[in-house]
Image (cartoon, rainbow, N blue to C red; front, side):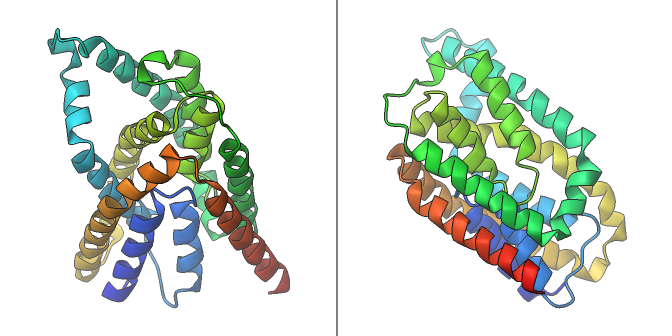
Length: 265
């Protein structure tokens, strides 16, 4: 893998991870057309996701700190933080079950362009539907265990390239009546244990990486981190105002183009 490939893919990951357009789908499409690109398993993709999750940790460091200290505090927000922590743990369970049970199957889909195109169209449909929700939403304190389980299932399904993780989880919560900013924050926080687990599982593939390529892997992750940090604020503003229609149209067009390309080649 060249340094140029690493920087390009890092930029794509950072820009698309927090936008509801499927970063994994964009990475798979770009890698398909990059001459000579190769990686052991999905190691590089996972490291790019780890870079953007590091951006989440930095951006939401105060919220993460409050969650980790929730059981040791007695202030007025401690109960809400403990409730949110319980929801995040519960939501992580179906994601882990789906990811571990179907890991090899999902990895095989990363080279299947027709499936990626079809899943981008599914993402578009979810965004169109969620964008039509107009009622007042619930905050973190009003979220329940059903919300957590459903959004965990949505995140697990988003391992399929073309299904946007942020798009599907945020759409799920919006359709459940959760307000936009709470949906986005919960989506970002729920991704942390999922990406952390996937990173640990993929580290065994490091032994198959040419040592000369390790700097490129590090550069790609760093670029994803910096770009992702800039993209988080933008998505929060977008979701707060439920402006999802443009992303839905983009996913619909890109998915249609990819499927048409697959049919003609």
